[in-house]
Image (cartoon, rainbow, N blue to C red; front, side, top):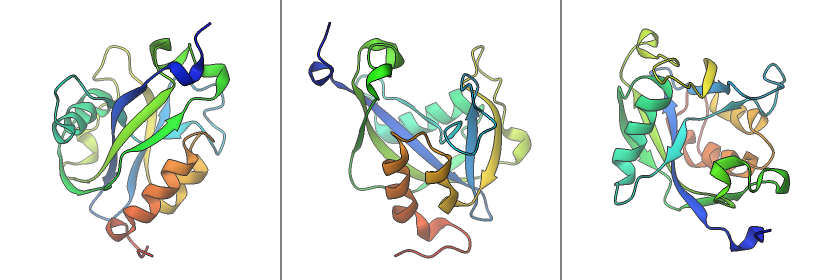
Length: 168
């Protein structure tokens, strides 16, 4: 068996998509067994970076693939790459079994479309089955435990874009 520490991190981008009111797009994973529960079934759009792909291009491509629209403009970027490790029971299963976790570049984006532009079924194998707008401060409580620290960092980093929330 491969040692978890010997596996690389998958290069990835993530999108914190703000609507005009400063709320954040969150989507419920289609394959999550406790999707109605308060934590874990909801996440932000994210996905892999293709070889030699610019992360700014990748984040818009991932939005189009995962939520059916790239009607957004980049308004901010977290300055550091953030990493997370998969829990032991997912190593060798998730991410094609080839990675220990992900190394992510996160962007804040302003949604320039309307709710009717969002199509979770744009891909033949949709990642999400439901979506909603949420307050930025809700993100950590919605995340699976192993992603929660990243969502806490993003909540602080992008607070200036949220409605009714202030940066620290």
